[in-house]
Amino acid sequence: MTWNGEELDVEAYLARLGHTGGTKPDLDTLRLLHTEHVAAIPFENLEMMLGRPVPLDLPALQNKLLHSRRGGYCYEQNLLFAAALERLGFDVTGLAARVRAGASVTRAVTHMLLKVEVDGEAFHCDVGFGADGLLEPIPLRAGVERQQGEWRYRVKQEDEGVLVLQTQSSDGWFDLYAYTQERRLPVDYVVMNHYTSTHPRSSFIRRPVLQKAGPTVRRRLVGDQLTLTRADGTVDERSVPVGELMSVLDREFGIELDADDSAELIRAH
Image (cartoon, rainbow, N blue to C red; front, side, top):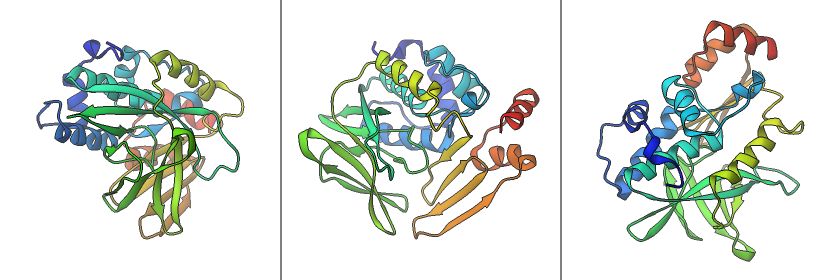
């Protein structure tokens, strides 16, 4: 199996999601698992802030995201999701993207997403992009537009087979990332992960980055700035004093650290 789905503790995964529905490999199950995963497991980079490596083997992912009830970033989230889908009988292909998100320069290919084929149709799945990310799968074809909660997404076609996932904001359509359907393997994400988690210019090693997508509110904590964004364009933003950091992690993102990790994170922050 490409994603080591046979090694997954599927009961622990479904329990982490609070999943009580069926597990038949059909579109209803895919949509429900995607939605539940995004709601249950937040985007976070705290291991990098604590000066630790980010292993991508399935036992490490299960220990962190399932048993320790932590979050992770795109490779961790989507590799775990791919293993779960494979275990349940879905056809899963790894893809990769260049994040745009307001960038004025072309960025490297560093984001992981998935193509999942169900009943002869391909779906774009991504449980690891953070606050602006998809809440549920979207058909993987140009021109598709979908409402998810209070947010709207579409897939736009560009030259040379490039597709762009966009979300609608109060200022119009906003590019999230651009990708092709070139197949990627787990080893490709190991290389991307090494760059993203260790390179001095990576935005993930200098400050806490926590995000959570929701049907009505997108939550972000970047550095000491907590931002809540709503679909009508209203934004609530405030600074988080160091003394409140742990309570914000728990209240807004569902992350509880033990005393040693909390103290180390505060020192690093």
